[in-house]
Structure formats: structure tokens, C-alpha cells
Amino acid sequence: MILDAKNISKSFRNGSRELPVLKNLDLEIDKGEIVTIMGPSGSGKSTLLNILGTLDTADSGTIIVRGQNVDSLDDESLSKLRNNHIGFVFQFHHLLPEFTAIENVLIPARILGNLSSAEKHAHELFEYVELTDRMNHYPSQLSGGERLRVAVLRALINRPSLILADEPTGNLDKRNAEKLLVLFNNICHDFQQTMVLTTHDEHVATLGNMQFVLESGKLILQ
Image 1 (cartoon, rainbow, N blue to C red):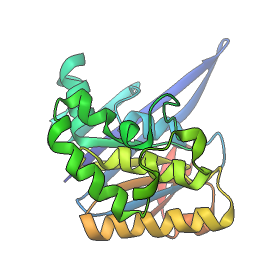
Image 2 (cartoon, rainbow, N blue to C red):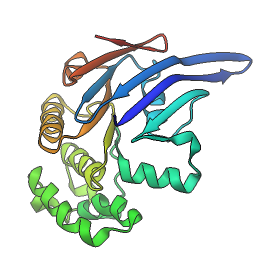
Image 3 (spheres, helix red, strand yellow):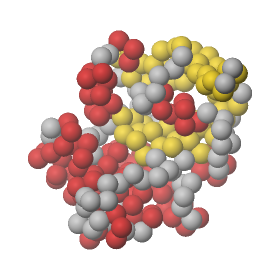
């Protein structure tokens, strides 16, 4: 099992009011699965993804990634687990403008200290998504669809156990959104990659071999 989340609860405060977002939520994900989580804006999808990715903490419950309970890890160990085993793709690509496409992709490998061994893999990934001729371009020189593909490669560079994608098609036109879904499907098939993807789009949700709706703080299997 890649990820096991049990009894995850999370609330936010608005003045004196407590607003529950996630309520004793459970999720188990095995290798090679594509999990989609659908729900409207404000339903807690991003909050859940941040908790699964160890970027945020739940009020209660446990998160186990590759057999490790994240609550038992100190900050350094947690950062190492995150960089080794979890890749992130956000709605906004968050590429660093002063770095070229390939430099952006290699940032997680540089942090991990395996830059030299990752460079060959980076070139293979750019070839895989047919962006070899754009490797040395800066984000401002790339189209929106190209920038998001580069962000996907950055998530893949350390060969993570799990990719978390938060509304990745939200800022794309229909054509580029469809191309991204094909890419995700190919990646999961060709690399046996495990992925969790949030969306408000019913069509995007069909990508998952496990499809959930986040409703009233619970995941409902479709």
C-alpha cells in the first residue's frame, strides 16, 4: 500500500465558529491506482490533498506513507519522505521564472542531492512529453500547456511513489486539458505511477479507476 489515511478530521475557525471540513475520512491507495476526488470549490479537496502530501496536518487521524506514520517523523525526516516519495502538481504551475524548464524540473533532484544521476532521466522525460526543444526555454517563453507539462515532469523527476495533482486542468482550455489527461493516463500506465487528482469536472473525474466525491467531509465512492 502506498498511502493509508484513517479517521482524518480537519476544521477551521471563523471567529467563534468552528467549520468542519473533513470528518473521520478514510482513504487507502495501492500502487498503480489513479484516484480522482471530485467536489465543488470549498468542499475541502485542496485541504485533503495538502494533508495527504504532508504539507498540512489533520486535527486528528493518521497518515501512513510507504509504511511510515508521518506523525512519528521530525521535520527533516518528513521533508526527506516528501521529496523522495511525493510529487506535487498544482493548478498554478509554480515554476520559478529565473530558471529554464529543465532547471525547474531538476530542482527536487538538486534538493535530494542526486542531480548528476537525474539529468539523464530529465532528458528522457522531456523526450517522453515531446518538449525536448523547449528544455532551455524560460517559463515566460512557454505556453500554458507547456508550463503545466514541465510541472508534471518536475513532480516525476525523483520517481515518487505518489503524485498529488490539485485541479491541474483548472486553468487550461479544453484542448490542453484533454492533452494533460492523456499524459496523466500514459504516465500511470507506462511508469505504474500512483496518482490522486482533485477536480470539479465530471469528465476529468472519469480518469480515475477509483472515483470519489468529497461531500460533507466524507469520501463517497462512485
